[in-house]
Length: 235
Image (cartoon, rainbow, N blue to C red):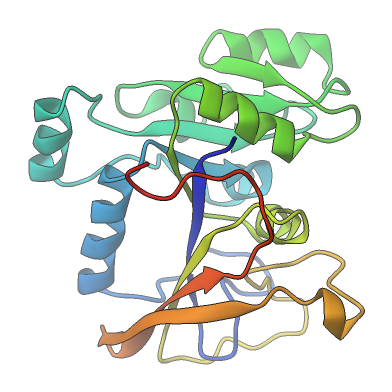
């Protein structure tokens, strides 16, 4: 079994999530920020890849005091468990994801991660070791489910998202499409990586709903995945 996994991303109208210099840019607005804070608060855990940590230094905390109070009233920590997929143990010990806000942190590394790096990370987070050269995502998700994580939000970046789609580990995609063009052949997209070569391998989606907000468009898609042993929300 694994958690229900949904990806939340914001991208420009031409499908870019940042500039070619990978600088963080504001794509959505106040209404979408509030939506993202709410779905964070509704999640058991939030996951990012090491590239996002190094580029953006996110804290992944719930910003609204009311939402944090709601989590406390439900017997939860103020913030969801924050998870970094970091095959070689590059997470800086002073990263915001390890320092800001109360609650639990998990860093997933592979067996290729240098022991000295892993020991430093252990001072700030639980460490899950799985996979030889890279983190075994399916095994990681099974372990997260065993630890009680049922609803997992993924916020990037493109390399992690591509791997999750490639391995059939995504259930839902929430995409905010902003009213701007960023451009650039080397600018990152929501699902970077090798990409599928055959049309038969493409991941197929079904639209759940679409809504105009912040001058852009929010679309929720379900993924036509085969099997996966996942749990639906509320399971």
